Image 1: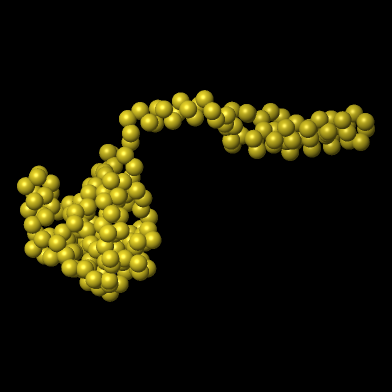
Image 2 (image 1 turned 90 degrees about the horizontal axis):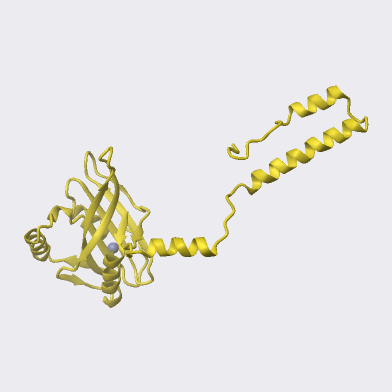
Length: 220
Ligand SMILES: [Zn+2]
């Protein structure tokens, strides 16, 4: 679950302006796996503010205004069935799913799925996913993140700067220590044999526990 940075910035603005609660509806874009066709991510690409009545602890969207928004989207070539996210703020109160929220989510049931986001002015947030088919099931605390737009050339610029300034080990330090430790141990065993502390048989037995050669390229 992701929310486009610009859409989120818009929603936070409404949240900051509102004295108490406020609601928004969001357009959800499905990201599909190219091979299986299954949904791999849901991205909220935009939020819309509709006429509504709000108080310190309630937010009610005008059903006629919601219908108008749907018509408006259709006239712009946007499938209004993708209006599958309800985002609302609890103002200065904690974020949780209240009985009123459950009612509102039930009212928005669309036969497929609905994402809900509840936030507050402190920037606490919780995301919920309701699925209506084949039965109504929901997850109350879905992991979500803000999706930042890719800026042309920024990734290439970061890569060049990183390569110029960061000297990275390749994560094999532990393995190199093991190889070095093993080599030291083998030398110790040979030294012990040379000074007569270890018979040839003992040495061979001991050596059997240690690989003669370790492959630096393929550590494990
Ligand atoms: Zn609520």
